[in-house]
Length: 112
Length: 114
Image (tube, rainbow over all chains, first blue to last red; front, top):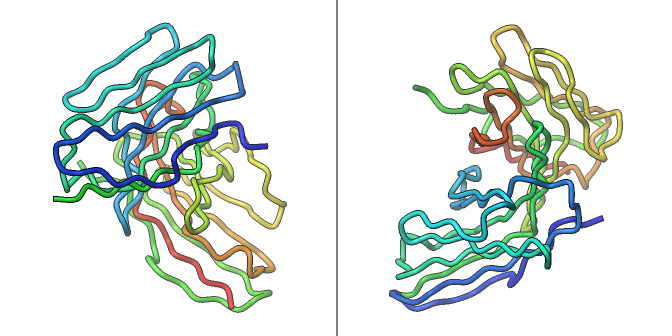
């Protein structure tokens, strides 16, 4: 059972453009939604996270938008840079301290 | 402050063999989790250890087992290896089972079963 569905699987954006990645979750027990960034040959690294009582969170060029009623959330990467080229994973977690349930990942390529 | 280190980085095993993967947690972290990441997919939770006790397990068979030591380092053991076990195995450590503290991942061990 895939509890977190992520789309698109890949996207190409020009430098300076906006990258948008969408996720939908099924488990209403999730109360913490992190995004991880993974470069080739490396493990995922926490990028930004949000709790469902907040509709938006912004950190630098990265913004999470959260729609609790639709059980959807998205990552926006503003002013995308070639260094942002990586695979991005959304995830859901019960904040009581359990596993991360990851989406399938989105491979982002930013062209100079 | 050191991060999470995993060893070995790459490993080739034959079907039916056994393998042990090792992980050193980030300093001060008392929780370690293991994930399996197949090529082109998101990581899948195997199990988690908190203060040396198993604290949750994903949908993996019993031939996947683990240990956490008093210094919070950890091992993942896989018996009777199958071809489908070929994947990147990620170790992640956290303080008090993650949550707002997040998880710090190692770079993984790439296991190939032939």
